[in-house]
Image 1: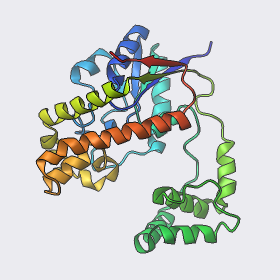
Image 2: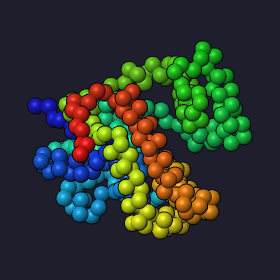
Image 3: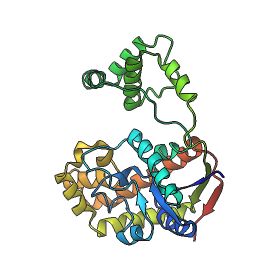
Image 4: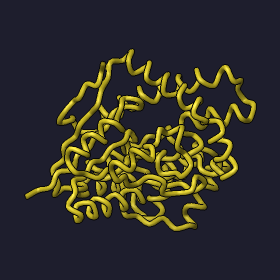
Length: 296
């Protein structure tokens, strides 16, 4: 009999944590977190990381994996998630996956990781090109090894252009060939059923929750948390330092913005993230099996 993975998502502040806890309790399940900011130790208040009480209710996985100055990427997550799913099932428990990080969620539905090994020398070459010549330099080098074109690559995204160049150089294959091979890879977790739940709320109610969430984080000590993270090297890890709530707090601590600007900026940027998440879920994830409206 095929096993079901229960995948629960929704935009920031929709209420995923509480819903997933209740859902997991009803199923006798354990939870795999699919939120990129929860990977880092010490990023607690600004990520609304599950509390000690919530973690005691249901075992959680893929939380507090790395020190804040060390990045954690999709390749490592994909490998860890596969092992964790197997371990949970071996304990006789069901699996609930929840979070709002779209690319990591996609890894349960579609291939997102290739098998090309990029050497340190190639990575250093691409980084040197970007440092000295910027995006234009990366594109010039990439076009030189891809005379037939760049396929559907997002040429405005420096990180994706750099990764594409590294993979072309490492594999000695053109980008269209690599894209075709990638599209033909088997889907992950193909032997599992997947029950995909999308949580939603009324737009104005969601905006109010975003504002209350930001106010609560600041009252709970977000600035002190960020000061400690700065001492622990958060700025060495752009993935962590650029997380909403953290980048604004860093700017405030450094005197780049005034105190009265801090809350409105966090709220504005969170609402911007919500809009991007809605677009991503609609365009990059399959249609949900259930849409649950949590509006009051």
